[in-house]
Image (cartoon, rainbow, N blue to C red; front, side, top):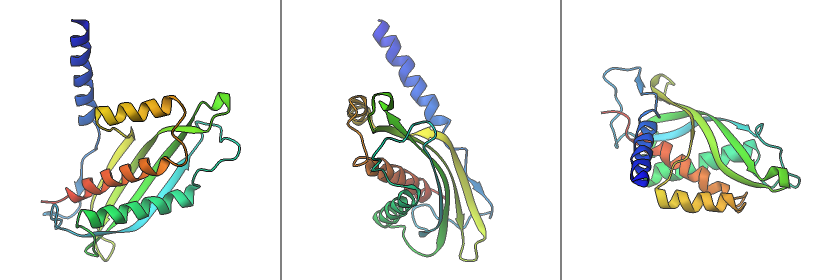
Length: 186
């Protein structure tokens, strides 16, 4: 009975957390000219701040620096815009992101990481840089399906998630943001 109750509370907590994510889209132009799933976008500006203040950077650090991380995000954004068939020059995307890299087992000299924390603000502008829409996501963490998250957490727990795996998180986050952008409009 306790397991059933725990499961119900867990599902309710996940549902409530899911509802508290996006702070809502603000459309500057009404009615919005954006067409959900049809408008095309390209990355215009991507301001990224890499925060490693919650950790001691390990010796022999092989992780991407702030500029390399930014270029990786832009590459994955472009890839997913193309895959979603919304890549083009109709609108431009401006992103401002805080990305927190957190090292795990640092007290034992390890250099593995856990899933990053992040927050971001997205603007959609037209060709004359007029703001069309914007939204933001408060400090969050990547959420995956239950079994994928369990496997991912197990790797992190045993210190197996490192610089070679970080691009998986970067791509996953890029894909989420592109899907959010694709849904903008009417």
